[in-house]
Image 1: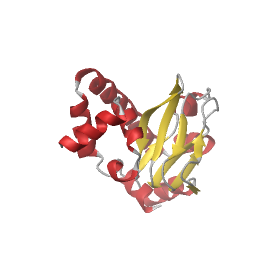
Image 2: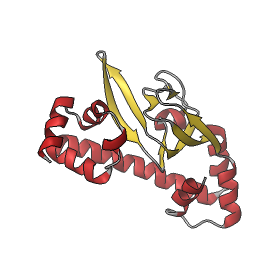
Image 3: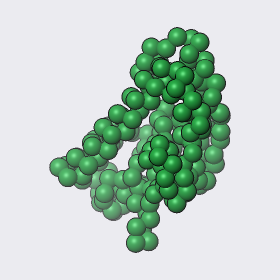
Length: 187
């Protein structure tokens, strides 16, 4: 719970009582490598804080798995539109490694948003950060080379290359595993 607490405190100043209220609605949860947190077509009713481990968000297009994002320690993961609007989800979220999570239900999330202004402030930060990541991903796919995307990811998330299968990283970068292997050898 310490990582979650630090994540919140890194973005908003919260009184101890409010922080305790926020943390109290998160439930610890462990998920084994290969297990699904969420499957495509379901309504997402939970958001997870990844305390340790790696999870991926992906879809299957023409029989091929396409990784949108890989979540790691101290990051939140959910199907945002499904979680917020209670619509059918388009993504699979699967544990790449054994993971320790802290889960908040949609109901508890909504209650906190009404009753704890600091949670709402933090949640707004999470939402803005999600949009910023999406914008960055779209921009880099359009305006950078595969080598630049690889170098940026290697610098920003070096642990991905230690614990995540290369085919998932390659897919997230929009390149083939063979191209990723060549880039890794060159750098």
